[in-house]
Length: 110
Image 1 (cartoon, rainbow, N blue to C red):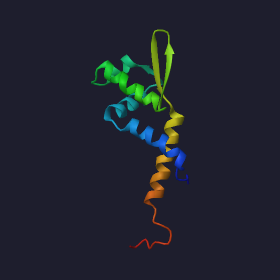
Image 2: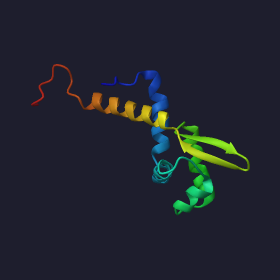
Image 3: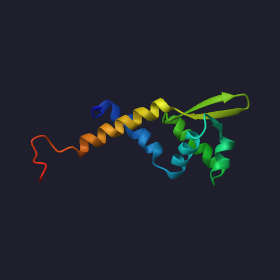
Image 4: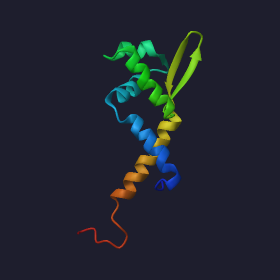
């Protein structure tokens, strides 16, 4: 079982969760998960959002370390940072399992 994130990990965890706290960014993650990588224009083509809006959301996801940006000639390619997302999943799982567990010494029937 994973341990509860320590105090030094809580701020980066909160930053990453904040980056996920928008439906458009969740849609972008889903879109990126379906492909190895894609450019902003390809993401725009899959969502009902303006390119400037998608670019803003991609920047937030890149800044949070959840998406990687790779310049390739005149365009930029975006891909999920699967290692960072797996770490986020582990941290949230540990947080929830700790928070949802009964306090030690507590009667689970109460």
